[in-house]
Structures are given as structure tokens and as C-alpha cells.
Image (cartoon, rainbow, N blue to C red; front, side, top):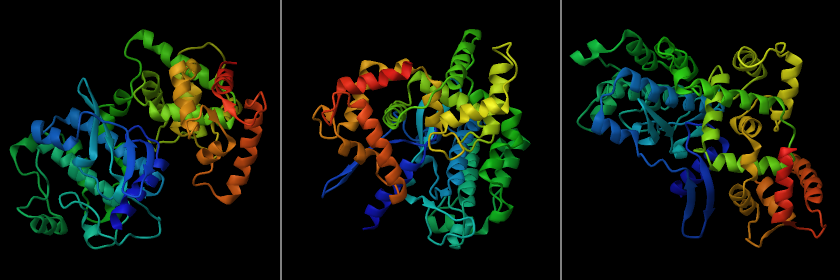
Length: 427
């Protein structure tokens, strides 16, 4: 069934992504009657409701929302994922801060993996937000940027650029591609904001700005949105947070696969934890191009700016030193640091050995709830979705790790043995 395919597609997409502005999947299982997906809960509801009740919004308020949406979309595009159904109903509000909404995009059921040399043909999307090239069944990832342009127009005005009394009339207006800034409200909107909308609503995809280019548009730079959105240091004493993060990264040692997975599970499932939120902010500041990954050059620049210029009188960090740090953190060896890798290295390891977290992680591996972890249960966790070639490497690593953690050699890992292994994070 098509509905089943959409659900499975969304699950696969959500398992691939790791970004602060994309909803997380925690658990998934199914029965003969239904699929069950446990997703991150955003209790403040949909952006659509806020626009309906409180819109239009100020430029500053709209900038913070739009930057987060574009950051998520740029990350998706960097993984060759196109969302195809961006709209305020698919933007959830995580929480409200002073003058800021923290938002996350959701509903990746319509998303697909695209090829840079291939155009998609299937018509997917909602009438107000659909790009004209999608209607022509010949489109690429730039269709998401068009949708972002429509959302920004609505955030600032409270109404859509391509209106209509029916879906058919809306579609006809989208196909024509003509819009205007049609009341006095727009006279108060900056030329930079309107310029960004114009660039995102260019009719031809090849003429349209990319998500990455949009993030570096003068509208965002003028008001320093990235810096303000990801500002950890509010008070002078907050500088210690950044210093501790970077010290932890400098001194980070390789973890065994079970420690890595346990830490990743805790990070993935507790995104509201203050240390994890602050790690996200520092990660985003170091990630200069906003693609959701940190390169060696970005890490080098981050250390120079956030550490050696502020917290130490030592010599400046060298490329060789950064290379060693990078190798320790880049546990999947793809020459980039994703957020979970960064957070594992940055946050205080004492968090990972608190009793609540240890029990939480242990139950994740103990699939049958027996109070003991078997090698087969670890295989279920680690082998899922891996190629045959990679499975062989993982199998050898698992056996080696299992033998070391199973100190009484009974072929099972008890909670006490698991706890002892995790305490090794502090050594």
C-alpha cells in the first residue's frame, strides 16, 4: 500500500538525519495491524497555528524561524534528500524563548533521495507551497527553496504570495509564477527581506538561490542571526561552558563500539538536556557553512576563534593537533564530524554514568528485558541496515568488545558489567 510505503520511507529518512531542526525518531516497531513510531514531542504545536493566531510577524521574529528551517533543508540537501512538502503545518515549535521560536521540520514521508544529474517526476506537495517545476514534473531540490520563499512571505505578511479561492486557482497562480508586495505592510519590510524572497521565488530553478546560499544572505548576516540563535555565552560566567566543551574535545579518547552506541542513544533521546542544547549551539557556530557537518578546516577555525583567542596563553593549535582530535572524534571515518560524534566528545562524561542514564541505555540493548545483554541482541542493534562487507567488520568489533565487557565470561553482559564499562569513560 502507498500509505505503508510513505511510513517506511519516513522512518528510513528520519534514521539517516541528525540535525537540531529536524524531528528525531526514538523508536519504531510494527504489528500486523499497525506501525508505531515514537517521535520527539514538540508540545507547542504547529507553526501554522501561530501564524493563524498571531501573524504576521516582525522581521526579527521571522528571521529566527526562517534560518532554522533553511538550516534543516540545507542539511537535507547536503545528504541528497529533498523534502517536497514543506509548509507551516510541517514545522513544529519545540519551545518558545524570548523573541525566538525553536522549531523543527517534520513529516519526511514525502521526502526522497535525489541525484544531482536527475530530475524528479512525481507531483508531491501542497498547493500554496508547491513549486511550478513540480507541477511540470521536472524538478530537483530547489523546489524546497521555493517552499521556503512562500513560507517567509507568509511569515512577514500573514497571507500567501499565490492566493486563490480553490486549489485549482492557487495552482494556476503558482504556474503563472507572478506575485507582488501588494499592500502598505510591505513598505515597512526591509529591502534585504524582499530580496531574499525574490531569490527564493525565482521561477526557473537554475536561477533560484540554493538553501546554503540563502543561509548566507545579507538579511541574516545584517542581524547576525546565526550568532544570536546559537549564542551560548549570555553572561561572562557562561564562557566556562565553551571552555569545558573544547577541553573535553581536545582530551577525547576513542570509545569502544558499545560505549559509542550507548552515548549516541542518550544524546539522541535527550535533546532537551541543557548540556546537549549548548553543544548544539557550539556545533552550529563551528559549522561555518551550516551543512550540519564539521570539516577539519572548520574545527581548526573553531578552536582558534573559540579557544585559543579566549581561554589560553598556549601556542595556537596546529593542523597536526587538529588532525589527531578529528581522527578521535570521527568514529565513522567519513572525514566529517556529525553532531552526535561532536556531543559525545564535548559534554561532561559524568552525565553518561548517572544511574538513570545507565539504566535507560542498558534497556535499549537488553531487547528481551531479561536483565542481561547477549551478543545476538547487540547484533540486532548494530547490524541493522549495514552492508554485508561492513557487517563482517562490525561482527569482529562486537565480539572483541563483548569479550572485554563480559568479565565473568558467562556469555552475557549484566547491568553491573555494563555499568563498569561506562565508568571507563572517566578514565
